[in-house]
Length: 473
Image: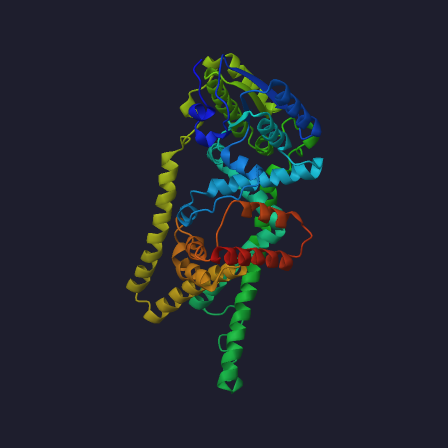
C-alpha cells in the first residue's frame, strides 16, 4: 500500500491527530463500548495500548470533539443566526446537553468518557485520531425532515410542557391571544362590560379621564381573562396530550442502554415516538462511519474504531461486505421534501399579508371614517408592538433591540414568513455574542424545577449581561 496520512484520506477537518504514515495492509478492529460505565473506559484503554494502531477512529464529529476537549465554541455569525442556518446546530446541542445531563445524573459518570479515553490513550501511544461520525447538525436536520408533522408538534409541545407545564403554557398563550383580541375589539366596538361614559360625570375632567382609562383597562383584562379560560383550557389539554406522545411511552431505561454514544441515546429518545425516522438515521450513521473506516483501511492504516455497541454489528457488516453500502451521496445533503408543501406555506404567508391590506382598503371603500381606520391601525400596532417589546425586555434585551422588534411586530403578525425576533435579535447581536455553549447553560438553568420563576429570569438576565460585557471587551 502507498504511504499517507489520515488527512489525505478523510480531510484535515476529520482528523484530530495525524502522527505517522500508513504502511502495509490496513485493518480495522471495532470496539463496541457497553453502556456508560468505567468498564468501557478500561476496555478501550487496554485495546489501544495492546494494539498500538496507526489510527484510533472515534464516533465523533469535529464540533463534538471540540466540545469534549473543552475548547471554546466559535461565536455564531449574526447573518447565519438571523437567516436560520444555525437552527439545527442549536437544536442538536440542546438535545445533546439534555441527554448528557440525564445520563450523567443516572450513572454518575460523564457520558462519552469512553471516547475521551480513546483520544487520550491514542495521544499517549502516538496513534492518530480520526473523527469518523457525521456532523451532528446534518444528523438532526435529516431526522427533522423525515419526521411527520404530528411528531414535530409533539416535540414542541413536550419542550413547552417541560419548561412550564401544560396549564401554565396553555393559559399563558390563551391570555396573550385574549389580550390582543380584547384590545382590538375594544377599540373597534367599544367597551363590553364597563359603560362607555364611566368616569365622565365625576366632575373633574382629569380624574374622570383617569377613571375612564382604568375602567377601559379593567374591561380589556376581564375580556382577556375570559378568552384565556375558553381558549387556554382546551389548549392545555392538547399540549398535555401531545407531550404525552413523547413522555407517555415507556421511559427510556438507561440501565439497558447499550450505547455510550450520546447521539444514539438521543436517537433512542426519538425512537419512542418516531421509530421509522430514528431507525433510518441510525442505519445511515452506520454506513457513514463504515465508509470512513474502509477509506482508512484501503489506505493501509491499522485502525481501532471506538463506537457505541449499538453500531458495532451494522458497521462490521458493511466492513465485511462493502458492496452493500448505500450510495455515499444518499447519506449527506438535503433530504427530498415536498416542494408543493413549501410553496403552499409561502403562499399562505403572502395571502395573509395581502388580505390584511385588502381589509383596510375595503373598509375605506365602504365609507368608514378615517378616525376609525386610524384607531384600528393604532390598536394593531400598539398591541403587537407592546407585547413584542415587553417580552424582549423581559428576556434581557436592550431597549434598542426591544424597540426594533416592537416597531415591526405589527407587520410580522400578519405574515408567518417574518418574525419580530429576527429584527430584535439582529440589533441585540451588536451588544452580545452567541455560541452553542449557551444552550448547555440554558438547560442547566431549566433542570431545577424548584427554582422560582423570578430567580430563573434573574439568572438569564445576568448571563445576557455577562455576554454583553464580554463582547464589549
